[in-house]
Length: 372
Image (tube, rainbow, N blue to C red; front, side, top):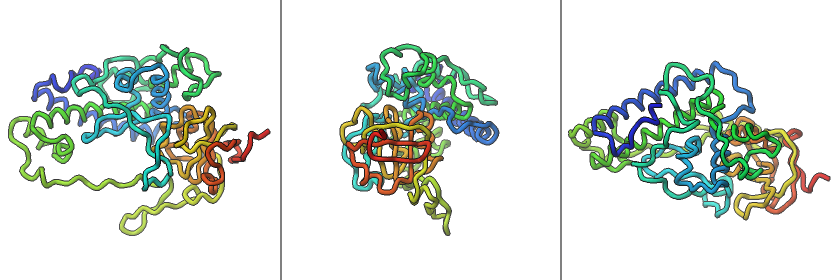
């Protein structure tokens, strides 16, 4: 309820802006603690729903209904779990259709998902209260069932291959795009992202008022930002401060060597044996994520890069040269009931785009042909 009741940042007084910023800090501390406890104490089946999987289904369904990207965050705020909070860059929703050319340094051979149009100005960016959006202030314990009701509109217009399966009943289809039935830990993760988004928009407004670049505002301490809002000026050394260097994502399996250096290891990292990471059997057309998407795409990649997640809705299968059953993409593949096999040696070279493939995620096998 608190998130839905916060006015647009530009409409807040400086005192109210500071109050809301302090609340977001308290809320995030509480939510992160609850999320950690939920992960440690509550069982979560391997195939349970995730916020990211729900967001992918909601994003694909919303675009199929013709909702423009700048409105999707308002109609389906669960899609925020597909983006990272940023003071520097405007919020963009990922491309779910692939295409483009790979950057020089891309270890996967596939370009990270393209971005869409900018969202509306901050003054109108707060999503309205709606089913699935938080209806209570983060409190003492995680809810047993996340608040909100499942969406039902537009089901007839959704394509069968948006992560929603033709055999599902209408109630099940709507549940796939609604955060209402997420497990407690995933519901908490989604709330964390919602509060982060509010905090980003509040900090941007605060930076505008004190005459600081939003990206530089991220280098200020909270007390310094509060002082600036009260007219005490910016830190004298703000222009000289530098942000920490970006670090690459951790491998699926790794160990820490001397000096805290991360070293990848494990069978999944070497790709020396096939294994199924998501059960099921499917026949489709090999796709590299760059060429036009075939009607029955089997995505063939070098590794299960998390940046490929937006491409999952509508896939027939997934094949990777390296990867782990515990990787983010493998978890999402199981949620989407998408046959997936990893550890397939030279898969990118052996299965060029356009080749017919049979993928057996249960047996951990990939073969050329339609399996007949």
